[in-house]
Length: 186
Image (cartoon, rainbow, N blue to C red; front, side):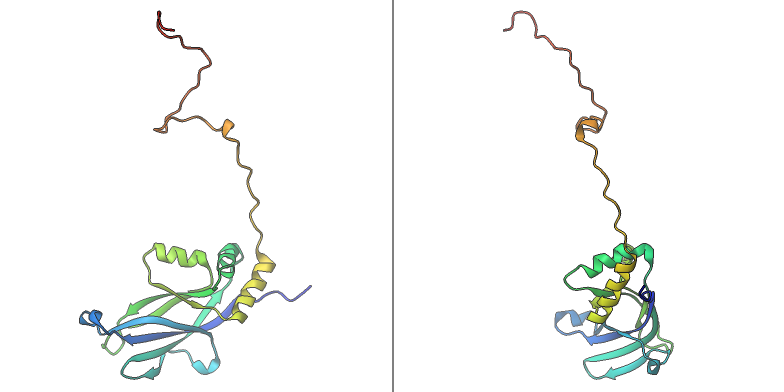
């Protein structure tokens, strides 16, 4: 038997602050966006740090996130892995900076599950995605192969066994009694 697929991976998130140009710059000078998700390395440390700053952008590295794969969410990984472009999903929020300066984007959670991302979007959270590299997709596929059990298809009842309803959803009845027209009609 082969070694079990590891259920967790440590990652770091790169967020980018980009200067806004054009008419939208009247309302805001900068906007934040997800730039990348990379495998965490010990040299990254544990605190967010500025990687690059110039007149048009800033890039911040946020280390220390763990992506866990859960057996009961295997279908969420299948949905991601079977798309033309499998991806990371990152939920991030704006936080006040510690020095009292401008608010900064701060990643909260990283996942590979479509189900998680869908729940976050339903809750009106800021969720962005970036492509997952082939080695991460292979890791996710190995997990899926070892843990995904498709739900058995349920037999659909024939329509003849379904209760009848009128157009308003009320129970309807069918009679086999022949109705006669009034006298004198042909």
